[in-house]
Length: 305
Image (cartoon, rainbow, N blue to C red; front, side, top):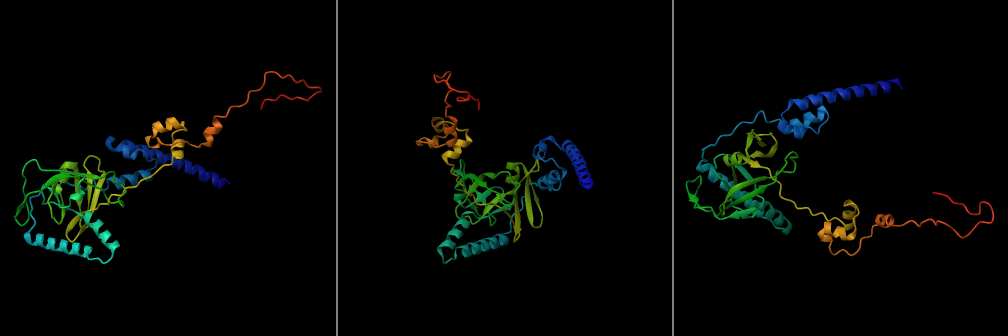
């Protein structure tokens, strides 16, 4: 029994000291990132969150615009590799596999390109909005040929679901649409300028972080000498709430008030809520007087329950 009391006392002292150290950590960080770490009340949880968010911030470097061009031989080799992959994805014999291949084609990968001056794609189904170019614009390809884009618009990229720290999607603006273009290119210079972010590369992957807070907003991996941005196909989930559940969550309003709060329930005719029915019951009033008189003691008993 004494050992248990001693361990409880030591645990209480440890928690108090841990909280004091956590307060010191709160006071030692910048106010602009305090909001993301203030919710963690222990040093262990504080450091884990800080490590996940800002581990690569000290290693990030400003990436300057590069005018490096892709050699024509490498460009042709890349086109051959891309066409072979597409041919393999569509060489199917079953209907179900063909559907999967079609979905993969619509969500073809995006490649980070330090030599591209603009974002480029040949898949118009990726655009959330697109409009014609206001002025003529020509794109110079690696082989020296020039081509005119057919439109310009915005594409929203959802980071991969296995990266839990990403807080939002990446909205890439001014993406040029070039029909029959076999690849999707993200211009490194346009990416860092438009999103005010830094990109840290290593031999196997890269990380995209906000310059102000160091928050991770994207990542990717290296494959065959190219850096691919990891995306997750958009998934739409529809949750239908029952009228009874909405009625309970809104504080048991009347049927007319519920229809005003939830317009989709305007055709609802009745709502069976047992709690509301019991709450509206009226207790019978106790008579002020009675005409019946008792003939003996304790024949009539008055009590307040």
